[in-house]
Length: 139
Image (cartoon, rainbow, N blue to C red; front, top):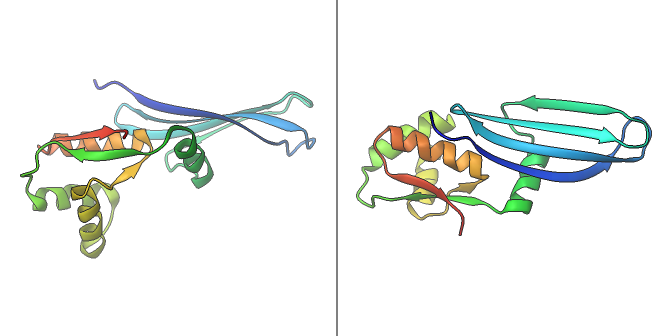
């Protein structure tokens, strides 16, 4: 079993119950082959607590993680990789068509495909299972 990859961020928001400052902890993780996220929050003024989670990460949480940790980049470790294999994996993993996969392929080949560390590691693991040498790295 592969090791989990997790990133977290702590931030504040306004409590919907009383308007006080809310303490929030957001996490995205790659666990057992699946990308998941969760946010827990607690209001120290009124005691309201919430916990939400899911598979498709909310844009605001993703943006906070990228701002806190910086983007990870997909790097191919074998420059002679066959483009058709890359395109097949990218189409299946990202759920995109031929037109869109060509643009993503160019970003991957240029070392410009980036995202949160769990997202990029998920794609790198999928590529490795297809026989393509790939790693998630931070500059």
